[in-house]
Amino acid sequence: MTAPRTLADMKKRLKQGLIVGGLVVVLTATGGTVWALDRFVFPHVVVDDVAAYEAAQSETSTAATDDDTATEPVVTDTTYTSDDASLEITTRTQGTGADTVTYYVADITLSDATVLRSAFANNQFGENITDVVSSIAEDNGAVFAVNGDYYGFRDSGIVIRNGVVYRDQGAREGLVFFEDGTVEVYDETETTAAELLAAGAWNTLSFGPAVAEDGAVVDGIDDVEIDTNFGNHSIQGEQPRTAIGVIDENHIVIVVVDGRDTGYSRGVTMTELADIMVSLGATTAYNLDGGGSSEMWFDGEVVNQPSNGGERATSDILYLAG
Image 1 (tube, rainbow, N blue to C red):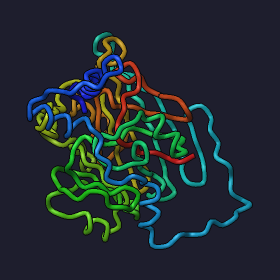
Image 2: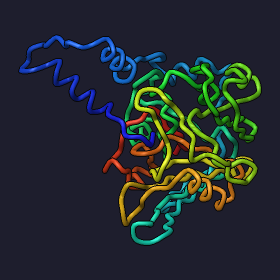
Image 3: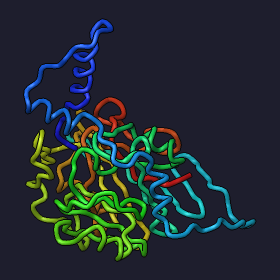
C-alpha cells in the first residue's frame, strides 16, 4: 500500500511487551487495541498448506511427457527464455533532478495464461501472513517475481489463485486473468468466485484501481481510495508503484516504479503510472500494492530499490517458475 504502515512496529512492540527479562508480562489493552492487534497483526491461517490444497482441487493430474527437443531455460542478464515464457527487463528514467522517475519494465510473453502463477507467503492462506518477495519466490522455484495485491492485509475481495478459490467477499474493482488468455477489469460486487471459476478464471487480483482501459487512461484515478479502514489507505500522490498491464493475449507488461528518493526517483501519481502503461502498449492496466511493497525480483536478485531501504514483507507474489 502506498500509505505508511506501522504493523512491523506494532509487532516489535508487542513482542517486547510480552517477554521482558525472560518473564511473561500480561498486556493491559483497551478493546480497540485488542481488536486492532487481532485484525492487523496476529496471523490467521485459513489454509495451512496451499500447495497441497491446490493439488487437491485439481480434477486430474497430467502426466509429464519427455521431449528430447525441449530447450533448457536460458538466463542472461535481464532476459529469460524457456518453452513457457520469454522475459525482458529494462530500466527506464525520465525527468531530471528532483523530478527524476526511475522504473523497471518486465515485458513478458507466455505460452499460455497459466504460466503466470501466484504464491502465498509461507505456503499458507489467511490474514497477516507475510514474508519478503525473495523468500516466497525462492520457495516456489521462481525465476521472476513481483509483489501482488497484499490480499492478507484485508478480509475482503475475491481471491482466486492458480485456478483455486480462496475467498469470495466482493468489495472493489478487481482484475481477472482467464485461462484462455483474456483479461478483464470487473466489479467484484456483481459476481461471485464460483461464477468466475466456471468462466475459466485462473488468477484474480483485488487492489486497483484499473488505470487504463481500451488503451486510454482512466479518468479520476488520482482521487481513488482503495480502503478506508485502519490507516485509511490512500493511494494518492507521488508514490512507488507496481502495475500489471495487458498488451495482447498472453503478452503482459509489469512495471515497478521506485519512489521517495529525491534525485533517483520521486515516484509517480496514478495518472502518471497510467501514462507509462499506455506508452508501453497496455490496453488494460491495473494498480497493485505499492509503497514499500513495490518490488521486482529476478534470478536471485532484487532488481529495483524498494523505498524501505530493503525488502518489505508482503502476503503474496506473482511469478514465473524457473
